[in-house]
Length: 464
Ligand SMILES: Nc1ncnc2c1ncn2[C@@H]1O[C@H](COP(=O)(O)OP(=O)(O)O)[C@@H](O)[C@H]1O
Ligand SMILES: [Mg+2]
Image 1 (cartoon, helix red, strand yellow):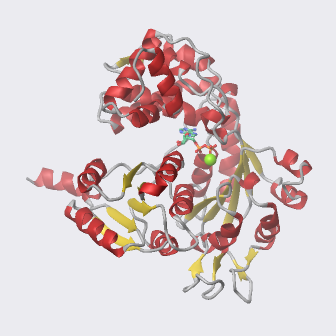
Image 2: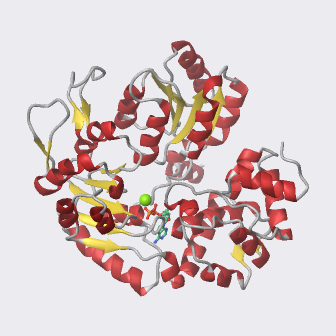
């Protein structure tokens, strides 16, 4: 008895009830949803506008958000989804859409929503969606003390610089590197190693936030600053007070706003929207981008003064293809991570498979490697992942950097690849796992639905 008691105590965080925030402007719907969700064993909260929801998310972040696409105030469901995905990627978002917004629901899936429900809501489907989310899932953020995985000299140098800069907790650091090289991961680690580690770590993605929102997101606003500002709101700079603020995808920051960022960097000074006075922040600022800022300066899309100000302390992360020696330890790391995530025995690669992975050019870098290994762990049977399975999976990989996640998805070019047996098996196994649902199968395979349809047609399976 004593032992089992201790064991369950130690694991108590896995038994805490998860919290669902319901965001819909129709109170009849929120009441119905709250009732069902509570019956399923979740804690619930509700908000009727996007801005109210955002405030609740900041005050007490939920695990899951049920989010109506159409909301009355300035922040609609899609805009809120983007903010959630940028600032709190660990939250699962399920969209609710009316018949008229099915197209938007598809866009939302692309923007990171996990699923969507159509109105009128089918409560059995809602239960089915919530079921797998009940159990406590391991925290997707790297726990404090988790180290970056690498053996290459180039990464060693980058990490040494990071460790030194981490201790100087007032210095602004610019982190450069292609998409998926680990910029965000490194930034979080830098915060954890810094004297500011006991305060918040906040990140804002500058790319997808509309111009008019970025200022109030970052600096907050006073009550009455604009029509919808019924209450004052904290900006992310204030949320990060004492800690670290990462300006992610800084190259995409609206030009007009860059002067205010410069003032924030130089004097830690900013002004809330509608405020009469400046505030002073005690934060460290990190910035990350996959863009060449120098080129952006020449194209007059990035301020020269801001460029100079940022170019003082930089860390450059090499692309994965420039450090293939990091691939074996990363593969081991991800195989054991995903095997345990899905409760499977640890899978290994057949000899020769690793060589294929080392020779591939990885346009999407570590993110792409990680995604591919997750799918291989889930989709392959048995404990050894065969070389054929690896090459089939490589054939299905996006062909260029844009598609591999470096930027907006480029057009898909189906038909350029031979359709091997393994590939066919791989597709069949994804369809089986997805219970025949092609949208999900395409997601599992990380290919577009059109590509999947095309392949199915070639395999003689007519797309529905
Ligand atoms: N050195 C590393 N060791 C282990 N995992 C890593 C490492 N670098 C990146 N990752 C993982 O790869 C993925 C992409 O990293 P991320 O920091 O989001 O890249 P970026 O911000 O450069 O696009 C993340 O899931 C991250 O956890
Ligand atoms: Mg990133």
